Length: 144
Image 1 (cartoon, one colour):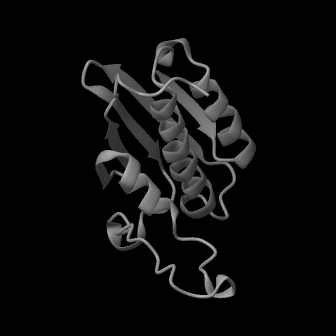
Image 2: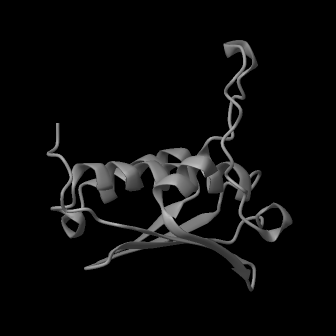
Image 3: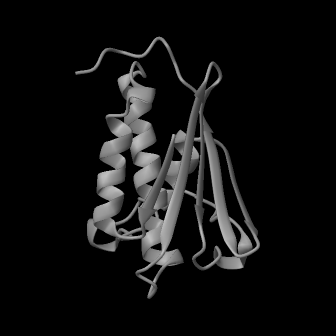
């Protein structure tokens, strides 16, 4: 499956709906589809907000494939590179503090790293390339 999206929040929402209802992903366990949606929402919104900050005409390309081993996804953009040319650590924030002192953001990469496998990032010829895999469990509980 290949999707090309304008780097806009509304396009990300539409793209997520397209993926969620795709025939190619039909039959996936509910938890796998939900986790995929969380990962993609975090990654795509980060691209819109950070990679294309100040450049609203950006394009995001998403490639999603399914095999007997699970799902594999590659997301490409030509926005700004990741800080230091590497993925954020994705460490969980310290939550042992007053509610008013909790950080507003910073949970996205923790979630991505928690839910995905083989998360990788490269930048070549001005293009960012984020990739990840997901295991597909066949013993998932039924959809609520």
